[in-house]
Every structure is written in C-alpha cells, then in structure tokens.
Length: 219
Ligand code: TMP
Ligand code: MG
Image 1 (cartoon, rainbow, N blue to C red):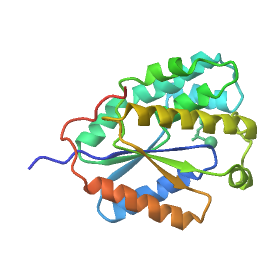
Image 2: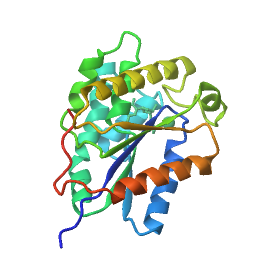
Image 3: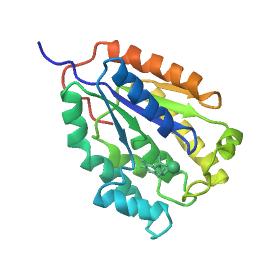
Image 4: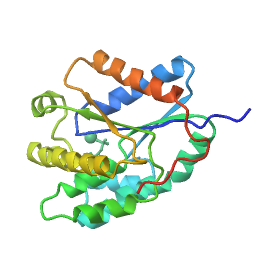
C-alpha cells in the first residue's frame, strides 16, 4: 500500500492573531488523535539566513527592503526539501506563516517594493493544500501582550498589512482554478473556540483525497 501524502496547511494572519499558540495546540491535537503532524514556522530563525532575519526584526541590523524580502523567501527555499520529504513520508505539516506573509508584509511598506515584484521569489515553492487566515480586530490585536516588541508591530503598519493580505486573497480568488480558496477564521474570540474551528477544518482536509505526488508549485 502506498503512503498517502501528508497535508500541507498554512496559517496566516497579522501579528498577535494567536497563530503560533493555535498552531502548537493544533499539532498536539492532531498527533494525539493519530494524525502524524509536524509544526513548521517562517521565519525559521534557526538557520544562518533565519538568524539574519531575527536580527533585522529585533532592530539589531538594517537591511534594504528588497534584500530582506529575498532573505525571507530564501528561508522558505532552504526548507523546501524538508517540506517535500516530510509530506512524502505521510506526515502532515502545519506551518505558522508562509509565502503570503512574505508578500503582505513587504508590500505593506510605504514606498517599498512593488506588489508584483514581491510575489516573484515565491513562485515554485510548494503550494499549501489548505490556507487559513486568522483574522483579528485592531482592538484585540493591541490588547494582546507583547505588541510593539519587534519591527512591524505597529498599529498603522498592521492596518496596511491587512490590506495587502486582502489584495492577495482577492487576486487568488480571481485566478480561481487550481488555487484552493482561503478559509478565514475570526480569532477575536475564546482560544478554545478558535481551536475547535481550526481542528475541524484541518481534520476534514486530512480525510479528503489528494494527489499522491508532491504539491504543485506556487504560481
Ligand atoms: P513571527 O512573529 O511569526 O515570528 O514573524 C516575524 C515577523 O516577520 C512578523 O511581523 C511577520 C514578518 N514576516 C515577513 O515580513 N515576511 C515573511 O516572509 C514572514 C514569514 C514573516
Ligand atoms: Mg511576531
């Protein structure tokens, strides 16, 4: 019997939407009910490229907006073989941020790189089977601890990130076809309720048939 390829799920959203905590809980839950699942995150700061990104986010170094954009993308490309091997071995991946963060955060910069330029380095990365956007109101976002500690955690910038995400999702909806639709879950409410909605959507997707080969590349 051939192993069913793992499901590749990506969670996106603005800072302080609760993505990282929800991803961790989701991975624990999936493993506890017998769905072997690995947690991944981007930026993955535990690599040479990721360490530079960490220094940039912590305001220890300055980098040109294009250069740091390419570093974020390179960080995903360096883990592409790991993503493909993991999925091929039948293990699911829950990924805390992916290419969509890359595009939305850079495209939100005032006088920064052009939106279409931002999309190009992501072309060809493994496409997720399921994309979930955790939406959060500015009030809930600001009330959660730690907001403002890193570069980008600024209310006005976050508003522009939200607009860039919306543009991205609209474009993908218009492209239709092979692009799986986004599932948006409102994350203002209680942690456990959000977790239940997430788990239900992901378990349903795990149980769905999918192609045996590797995921298609992002277009
Ligand atoms: P984190 O808080 O999820 O670790 O992400 C760190 C910050 O990096 C967050 O503000 C989003 C931003 N980011 C980008 O600007 N580009 C990217 O490609 C990714 C993955 C994150
Ligand atoms: Mg953060």
